[in-house]
Image 1 (cartoon, rainbow, N blue to C red):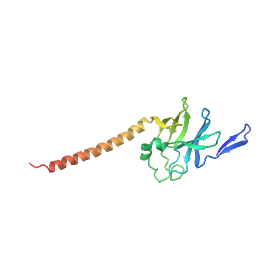
Image 2: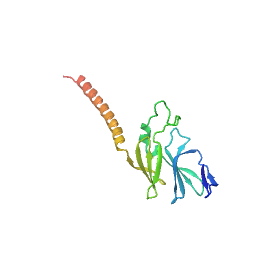
Image 3: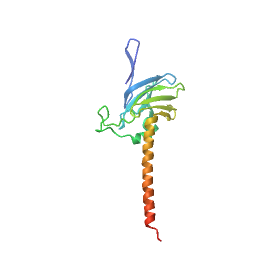
Image 4: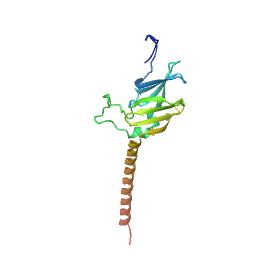
Length: 173
């Protein structure tokens, strides 16, 4: 729940955020009169990868974006920690772990900090069509890229070798 208090701390209003659980950070977006929150979506098998918006006037909570939709390959490549438990002891996959965020001056972009990916992400068009604009994680991304290039090249050379071997064995002199 979100609680609003007066200047002496008395709760004056609460908003139930539904099937979401707060995680680490939230901010008030004055321009749009919304509270943006990092949450766990309790309907998913992943944690700490969802951002919701809460309309201050109506109290309505809705998905702003799900990092799985913005970074599908990164999510697909993620694996569970050894022992099958995340850092909280649960079995949900903690593949990105957004720790914090901040608004940019354009009023329609966020910068996110990801613990599990050791990266900083800029998401643009957050209120219309959220989209990854920038990811800063050079060393880690280069290693992941090199791994997949090496894997592809290995398979290519194996297929090439066997193709040449088979064509040599099928030659008629």
